[in-house]
Image 1 (tube, rainbow, N blue to C red):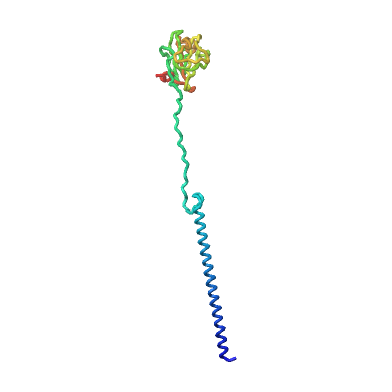
Image 2 (cartoon, helix red, strand yellow):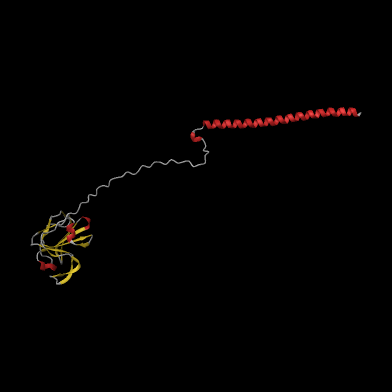
Length: 229
């Protein structure tokens, strides 16, 4: 074959190769374009679906995207109602002297006093009030008779308990008492009569030995009587 023919044959083959390459390039370009278009369409479709989904969700269904803490609503607790304390019904203790007369021996628990009957020095837990035999002796305050008994040293005795821990004792009474244990008495009510039954105070004659305790501790009868003033 001549050189001339070989050149024309080679030129013809080159044409077809170029044509094939162009077709391949067009195919690749079309394929890339198609893939990009598909991706774009998928993204657009997904966004459209998300918008539709969010549009149909209620307020409580939409996810919270913010990261800052949401304020919590605190329940309102009603303030406690103030109540007025109920009255206690406590009354002021009223007092009166158990008998009218002169005080012949005073209260002396911090110093010794001389006893004419026993002829010695001793404390004196009450006051001795002079009164003629048979003189009425009254309850110094309202209360309840705790006991009635014959004391070996102080003679015929009545003990009355009162509010707030006070107790009054009446000794050297005549044996014809007007009350008994368990009786409720009012202030000024007759409980007995003056006598001279206290053998450790016989030199004093007819009188009433009046003593007071507060919470079982000796107390000056004058201070007790001052409570009612």
